[in-house]
Length: 206
Image 1 (cartoon, one colour):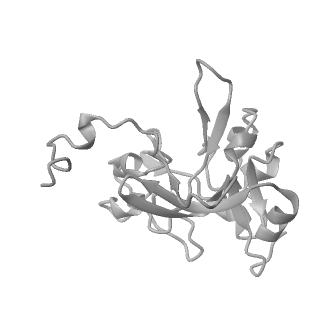
Image 2 (image 1 turned 90 degrees about the vertical axis):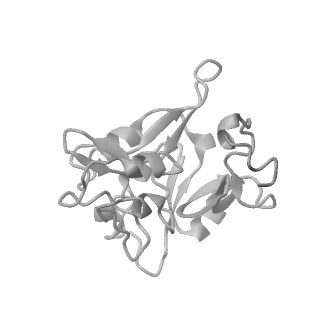
């Protein structure tokens, strides 16, 4: 159990994922998810490796999903947790699904509502770990204090990302080997195409 003064953090270490899907199954059991799994288990490169990686909502400090919602259905708690769209307000437009830099929100057609990881608010508000972090056997998904992490884990914690021109700071941390390079540049190895500048404005300085 964690108290309010403990300030626990949610951590993803993609390199530890073993693809067991325990997180996917446990996510369905969270009381606020109505039997839906709101976690993504991604396959890195199916043709060359069996490596998988979990992806939960990163809970951005300035959430794009909330910015683009025309119905003001997506709210953020005082603790920084970005919640699923409010059912009475959500119009199912999927703006949030498209806008999220991490590709997290899911439109549930049977509910006509956008839903996403809410960090198991019903559990974390009472000092418990999120369901996925409580069952992950390899601790790819981890929840605890920064002191506990430093005492028992390798790596550094980072929560700053670059997506092209967009800088994103998140509530959820990612594990990296070294903090020296600075924020994670998600598109660093992205091959540039004409779609990045379809009117050739950047190259000609217009």
